[in-house]
Length: 577
Image 1 (cartoon, rainbow, N blue to C red):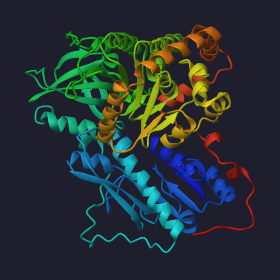
Image 2: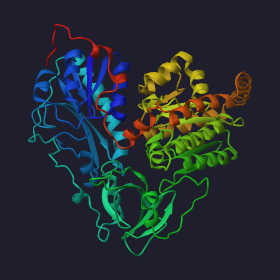
Image 3: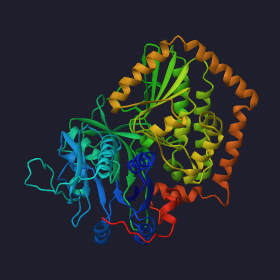
Image 4: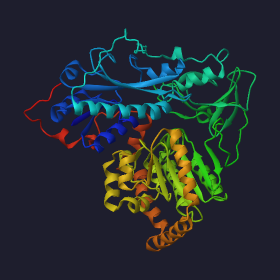
């Protein structure tokens, strides 16, 4: 089928659906909804048989949904309507929620229903639920939808609130007064829930140290307490610990409220507060703290028998210079532990997305900070590549992009959870790339495919990644099931009779590769290109980075997302609904 993805932005869910449909053999093109002229030109050229909307904040014009079958993926249960679906579900402590596929109609979210998928709610931020539960349910709904269209004869059911199975309702947009935290009355659970319901947008508007700021990245604190609610008790790696009426929470990031003259980006809380921050202690942790899901810690470690697990849970998967430096030291310390296999776990919502563009944007000299950041992450990758006394494994339980995707390839084995999306490229940000990708990527997929992946700048799903050799194994199931299967996989890997042979082969291959071309030369050549990206007069990197961190939607759909058929002149036939 010719399928048009009509989106507000090409987010993680849109990428997953794009890759899923493309792998199934469909002709998939993307168009951004904000540019109506481009949308209508695309419809005229592409003549889609289906318009699918996995992430759409715009209303579809009447003449378009009258002519074409338009299916919207809505992150709510049957009957739920409105733009704050997940927000309300979190605030109201819904035990279960869901995703619904519905047909575009006169009223928003009120069209005929093609299917719905439930999921249990976790006590987690909205963005985390969206990236995991919503994404998985949506992907399965799209599979069901394509089955119905292929088989024919399926009739979607009208939305009928008299039906006892319809539990949802029309909910208004949540505004900041409804999100407001009452620090004297709200307990810790309520404060967490309010911040979770606004993460990653729009954040909860509040005031700290005389500054109007939006709050993000809330984590429960179980060891520190304060007398005065809302008082700042401590800091840790850029986060602030804030007292509640019955405990405390960590707030990792803030964003100053925009004004008529100034716009701001999300940054570590202590960076935003700066000199306004009162004198409070740094609540330090060991370099390699034991894994504790109830403790706020960006880096943590757990050992089970001969297997060590290293987490680096950086916000949104971005890794700034100082974070990379800490990760390197933690990795080196983990390597000293008595293990046979070291597993790199990444973070709760992203494995890694490479260098930290927000940190770079906020720097006094973004070009200099870019250079320091890329060298810091390169040091981490180099350490992984040179580990020769144990086997390493990248456990991609969540999406990875750019330098983060390439960093995973430095490991001996790469395992991915089914449904994970990789973006192994840099050019969409105006970068050549580093992280030793010119060494690791061709070794896995071949020189021609390495060039194709880095130049096409398209998402790669776990199934395709396995076919290409980007990953070695795909484990199906939820994140919890993935971790259980991963434990079995790594335990077997450590106990294998082939372990010593694999280790010896690894050392031998590294020695031969070094003789052919030293790692230092790969790094030098990559950084030579990156220096031009950071400092070159003709580089697009700084402009593209600015647009990314300030979340400026492109005026036109990037050409890489437009199917060749969408560029051709229309035929005489017209496919209609």
